[in-house]
Image (cartoon, rainbow, N blue to C red; front, side):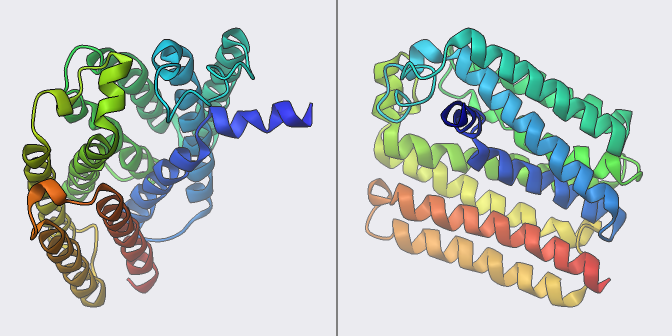
Length: 287
């Protein structure tokens, strides 16, 4: 029984669910301009909902997962869990996450949460099987969690600050995926996905990644402009972080875009996004 329960976090990709829930938490803190009890409901609800979405995705893509080295050890393709059991767990997690959001955050947060499930498990999952550029519309999934948190704060979603936050997470999601393709694009091809590595050269993917990373950095600079960050200290810290991101990637690309390190780039980009979230949290405490 204990060994079975240990499969649930793996099925739900808890390592992915955590940053997703932190982005929702960030949306709440930015909207409420402070830390309140509701923030923890946002964190818990989105975490459980994200795990449910990931579990459902593993059920949907088991035949592809069996063909890739990075995924064939997952609970379903490895035979450690039956698809029917995984589907039941996924539905329970989605229901539980939805109820947490409804109870602790309100109906709008719950609706946005379910919209995220729809976009990820229906729209994006379908598009990635037919186009190598599915990540662009699929990155809407990254923009919705901060809006879930923002809606829970009670502030209107029409506020420009909410839009700037959503745009930042949307844009940041795209080079995140390009870096994965630079690393394991051939595995996607072998599994039957239309991978960007089959359409573009490594140098072209590197150039594309660099452009989107720079765009992500620039989009972060709009956060203080539209009110997601208010204090001068955090605004200057943000400028420093954007400089660190862009200069670091330019240095990595100096020997040639085809030599851009996916691992180093992936770590730098994710540290940057985490740093921006922490700046918003600290700004709310200082404001």
